Structures are given as C-alpha cells and as structure tokens.
Image (cartoon, rainbow, N blue to C red; front, side, top):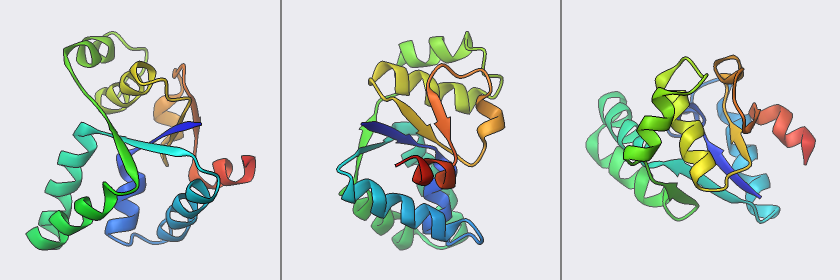
Amino acid sequence: MNILLDTNIILDIVLERQPFWESAVRLLEAAAQANLTLYVTATTITDLYYITHKARDRATARNFIIDLLQFVEIAGVDKTTIIEALHSQITDFEDAIQESAAQQNAIQVIITRNEKDYKNAVVKVYNPESFLQSL
C-alpha cells in the first residue's frame, strides 16, 4: 500500500509537537513493519525545511530531511498537479495539491490530522490513530 503523509504529520515528529508526536512516530514504525511505502510531496520537503529552520535551526532542518529521505519517497508536484488542485473540490489549496499528487502517484491513502479539510477527497483519508487501528 502507498501512503501519503501530510506535512502536519512530519512536523509533529521533527518539532516533537505534543500530544501528536507519539502517534506520528508509532505510525512510521507500523508502516515500516507492514512494509508500506510512505510518500511526502516535494512541497512538503520545502515546507519542512522552512518551518524547521525557523523553529530550530538550519542544521536540524537539513539533517532531519536527510534522515527522512531514508524512509519516504517523494511525490512530485508539477504543472498537472497544480492544475488538478486548482479544480479540486478540496477547498484548501495545499491539501488539494496533496490529493492531486496522491492520485498521480497511485497512492491509496492520505494520513493527516486535518481530516475535515479533505472532506471532498477521492483518496481515502485517515488520521494517524484511525489508520493504526485499521492495520
């Protein structure tokens, strides 16, 4: 199974945001044990760098992304992704990009803490806890 991790899930890990950190870490561990393929979008990588650099420092941001790339694949964001997102029924543009990238990369599931933002999604959407329960 291919799974797209929304930016907020990865930020929960790198910034150790409570109370979300533990379920995000358990999600990554469960995905590794179940041999699931994890993805993030290219835009997530740039957002992670920017936010982590501001919250921590440049070295932390860089090193976290280097480590993350050992566990995740990158779903590209190109002109087609953007055009599809602009015409999406998902009203939050960043989330529409996430879903468009998921569809273009045969990703079956998006995991996010903002399920309500994906109410019009075609791809199945879970929060970390509900996904862990579904395994």
